[in-house]
Image (spheres, helix red, strand yellow):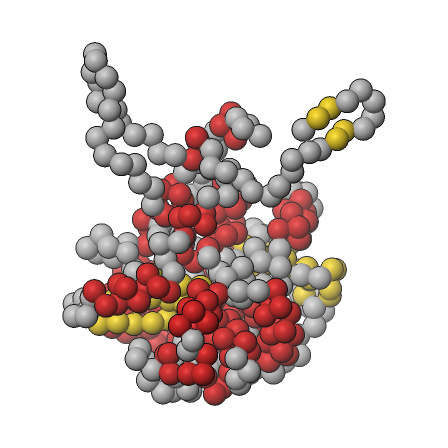
Length: 406
């Protein structure tokens, strides 16, 4: 950066690559010696270390999440032939793969297991929690997006109490599989998700099973799968990729602006309005309010960090009436997740059709409630809480560290 006298500042050698800083490296314990100082072993950093770091300001996540990709998953599957293998797929990933290869989602969905159950549990648990919290006149922030959770924990720790304590559908499904359905079996669980943050989410120590192992062995993004398909030239047999894992079944479609429908279901449950012709008052792209005549509550969603900042600023004002807030890190929500597509052209060609498809989906309030009640009545209360709920903690950031290498 060159400074010259006057009112003009000249910037040079600018690029968007941020290298790792010293503060994002775990300190290694050194052996004390009068003669020399040596490291006992080669230093390594893991995903869980990254999530525990209070001072990381560099974009080194790509080097950390590379240990979870489709090729790594295939290698692991070959090494664990004696383990029962389960693949959990998101609606958004399924839709993206179908669109990229000009397939109807219903056609490709015959190869996957029913994903509705885990989503229904998460949806209704969040709706019940919101109904309880809103009576205390407290804002409620949907915590389904792991990027939002980490953002609030690190940047706005005073708002952690506003976060929903309900696990994401991914974590509920994995907990359910390990705690109930296949309790005493050796499982290998992988998930296919629309964003890389799910990889970071699954690596947190709070999501460990009883034997201190991770609930989810590997999380791969949609773009990981698409890259693998292109690399191995499997594009002519996309549907068959899923058959080794899963059996044929019908699936329920995703709902709610392509981000699983937490705001929509909480609105329906709280207001008891089952007319699904819901109209949002658009403030700008990715930011809208749901204003209901006769309701004293305000439901709003914000997708993308620019819009999220707008909501955060409103929360700082004492007289704001925000009750339900659905925040998603990615612009346009989970359909446009950062791990969805391999190229901009893929995204531009696929996203409009994906949005139109989600507008045509059905929504069944009773089925969602019944799925939730079925699990709650089947397992002990302690087990139910362990499967469905978690907790979040504010992270104390060292402000001095954050300014070291800016």
